[in-house]
Amino acid sequence: MKVIITGATGFIGRNLAEALHHDGLEVIATGQSLKVGKKLEQKGITFVPGDIRYPDQTDNAFSPADCVIHCAGKAGDWGKFTDFHMINFMGTNNVIQSCARHEINKLIFVSTPSIYYTGRDRINILESDPIPKKQFAYGKTKLMAEKNLLELAKKGFKTIILRPRAVYGRYDNTFVPRILAMSEKKAFPLVNNGSALVDITCIDNFIGAIKDCLSAPDDAWNEIYNISNSEPVTVREWFLLILNIFNRPFRPKNIPYPVAGMIAGMMEGLSLLPFGNKMPSMTRFSVGYMARSMTLSIEKAKQKLNYSPQISNKQGFEDYKKWRTEIYTQT
Image 1 (cartoon, rainbow, N blue to C red):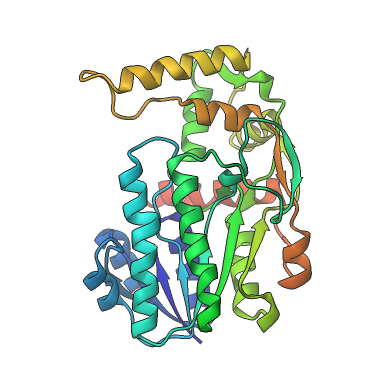
Image 2 (image 1 turned 90 degrees about the vertical axis):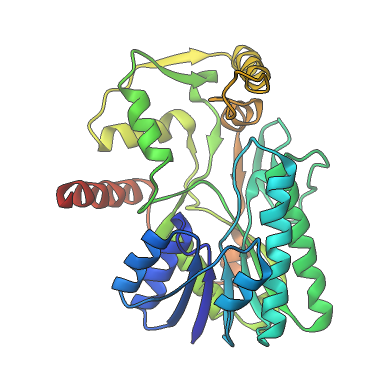
């Protein structure tokens, strides 16, 4: 089987490219980082540099294949709508056009469960549950891309849309390092004392879900699936688990949600000023996302994809620590 992976120099795409190559699939990896691309080539993976914002670059990276796994995208809770739209929507359209030109009729799209966020607690969310009309730029542009992809079913194109919650693991150089850095401060801030119940997803479980998609029956395509470890934890338990595994101190300090929201609003306002930072260190969305419970039902993925998470929350972070230790030892 031959697959093309967009965003293959990013966190999820890189892990996926290495895993599928290890399994014996023919992998064409495309992405923007030449440095990571070289490392993929050293593992025997074909790398073609490309930016999905540009149709010619996307088309140059594509060739006839069995499936495209579209990991490229712009994530985040702050920024201009036009920037998110250019990558998540227009970039996906470029990928679709390249699929058509190279007669590829299957695509797996990495989307986001942030589109479920309402500012209230939501437990065991189904893919069929109502989607709030108000969306931040990231979620809105991902939804727009989802809609376009599903509409292509009328033309015989097959899509699977995955919404993984809080993916972590190898090559994550953002989230866990940030938690470790926060542990070194005098106090570790927790909105609402970290009481929100959330789902998280080990990268190996998510890769397992994508592998399930590649072997899925026809009636599993043109569908949306939630993905997680299916092991909900509170935010406090989540962060404490990471810090315990890394033997770091945990000095929690409760910040009531209204107070955190007010501070975030001020930071957003300051960032818009000429002398302010372009990216606020805290946004109202990020505060709400950590203050409100959100868990996903993965029953649909279990039934139609035969998805079964194999790695526990704890094992996933222990594997991450092992990888991180090896990296620092090598350097």
